[in-house]
Image (cartoon, rainbow, N blue to C red; front, side, top):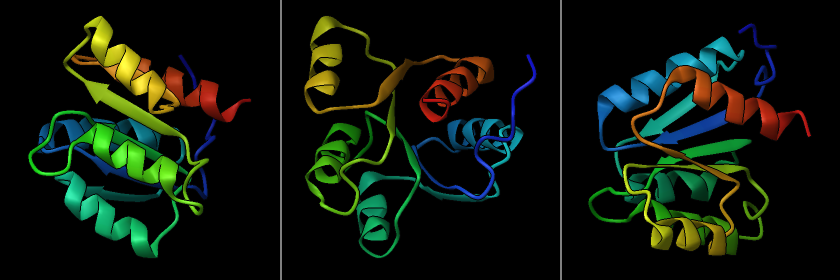
Length: 130
């Protein structure tokens, strides 16, 4: 499937404790035209980065040591500056409680692991074509 360069000029933050997942996400983002991609290996580092920078999209793993993805999402939604930033949660957990928790925390979308680059790009395309 051919994707437009919908992320051109947009700043993206990728947060996952697994370097291989961050790389997969970054390659997918680049296919969509992203060139400004920051990455962190945990939620605490991402929280510090969010103090001084604004992002157009955050893609974050749920299960990380320290500050979890759901905790980071709640911080983002509670921030006047970042509250409307699209936030995609990546998770290996797919139970009803997990889905309910991310929806309650106002996640923009979530993706169950393992996932393909096509799934990620499709979700991002939907967010930015609205």
